[in-house]
Each structure stands twice: as structure tokens, then as C-alpha cells.
Image 1 (cartoon, rainbow, N blue to C red):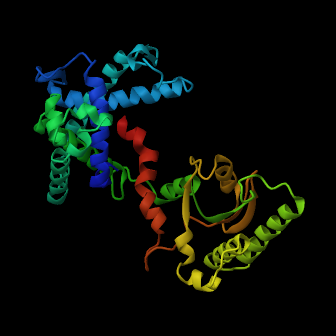
Image 2: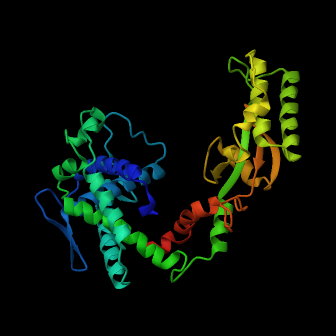
Image 3: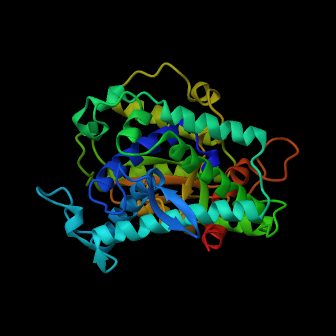
Length: 368
């Protein structure tokens, strides 16, 4: 959720937003540096600074939708101009303007619902919100502003200096930031544990189980030292047997760390490197859980082909998966198994991804 984002990520996001805002504010009609009020929503004025900030979001939405509608469009071509494009059946500029206004309407709606529900940000959350927006505002961008890649910063010393140069006041940036905290509080009021429309834990666990796979794996290359695919049948059979040997050891309850260390030792031997350590010594440095890899169903790493096969694999099994260039030794675990802190009923993975699950399950309801 928004308030859980680290300060480093928020600052990075703010710099990105600054770039997008720079791209959008130059061409958007509807507000300018000389205008204090951009529009009115339900009798509430939207300051120009708020409008400008949300125009950056809308610009990002427009470019993303354009990529979805025209995946083969070369946006890096000389003379390319987004504002010459059509998005969602209307001009790019009209799309950005429409969505900017929608963001502004949402801003007011969040404030209104927050007030109607009688929610207040507690002292700790409010202190965090103030620390976050102030740290972003004061963030030193002087090392960026001298670069041609960040020319839009116009030589500003701080992010706040830049925002003020395009018409975003300090109070507008503060209101914009605190609005995200209010939205998070509304979401929690409805859907988190103890909320008025609390999402059952079983639904959360089911979503995580369907969308994430916990695995340990390593690859055995089918290429020679020069990067060419091995064609010798005997050599390929040797690698296949090796992969299956590893699989059998893991299936019999062997330690993943030890099996992986054994493979690393094998690779050194094959390359002629001297290995003075025992595989067990290497394995002692890590535990099996150190090799855990949580892979999302939408991921394409290490390949879309691999991910598709992984989600078809039964949990708590080991298999060998072959591609053109690799054998993968894959141990699929159960993401819902209890491996967390002592006394907890849920795993760390369930705890860590509950908010993601809630957003996916109830994000649309929140927006409505």
C-alpha cells in the first residue's frame, strides 16, 4: 500500500513524477503558473499545483495505454511526439486532460470520504507523512540537474525548487502526499483485518497461492565454453543424467544447499579450476531457505516458459525442466506452509503479500 513505500522509493517516484510532469505541463491547457485554481469539484477548489502534479500521473497513464494499443509504435524515432497520437479514441492531449481531471476528482473524493467516515491519521502516521513529504521536497537534485537526461530540473538544487518553478507550491505538494495516506486509511477501514468489509484470510491465502510460487532452482547449461549449443549426444546425455541425479537427491530429502554446492564444485572441476573446499563446507555457509525464490505468475524470469511450467508443477515436488539452452532442477515448495516466526499461523510470505492480495482483490472496489 502507498504508506508502506520506502522513503527511497518515494523520492525516486517523485523524480520520475517530476519528469512526467515536465512533459505534461508544457502542453496541457487548464492551468499555468499564473493560475491559483485549476478547477472546482463538488464546490472544492483544486489548486493549480495539485492539478499539475496529477497531470504527471495522467501523462504516464496515457503513454502506457498508447503502448498497449500500439505495441509496435517506435516512440524513440526522431521527431516522435506523443501529442500527435490518439489514445482511447481521443487525442493524446485530451486523454491526459480527462484523466488529470479524474485524478483531481478522486483527490476530493478521498478527502470527503475520509471526513465522512470520521477517520483521523494518528500521530505516528501523521508524523511519518510529514517526514516523507518534507524529505522529498528537500531532496538534493543538484547532482541530477546538471545532466542532460534531467534537463527538465532546470538547474534546481532541490526537488522543491523544481516543483515551485513549474507552479507547484509546498502546501500543494503536502496536500497531495497526505491524500495518499488518507486513501490508504480508507482502504484499511473497509478491507483490512477488522475492517467493515474485512476480506477473509482464506481469500487472501487463495489469491497468494494462485499468483505466487515459492521455488528453489538452478540451471545446467547446454552450451559449451564458447557459448554454442552442445550437439554431442553423449555429452547431452551426461548433463541429463546429472540433472536427474540432483533431482533424485532432492526428492529423497537431500539439502538443496548441498546439492547446489555439489553442482558448483562440478562446474569448477569441468573448467579445470582448482577447488580446495569441500562441497559440504560451502553448503554450511547457507541454509536451504536462502535459496528460496518467490516468482509471480506474471513474471517472465528466468523465462515465460519456465514460469508457465512452474505453476503447473505440483507443490513439494522436484522436477527437471528442459529448454533449448538449459536443464533446470526445480524444487517447488508450498508458499502457504508455516515457516515464519515461532508461534505464527501464517508464513512470512503470506504476511508480506497480504497487502498486495488485498489491493488486487479490492482495489477496484476502493476506486468505485
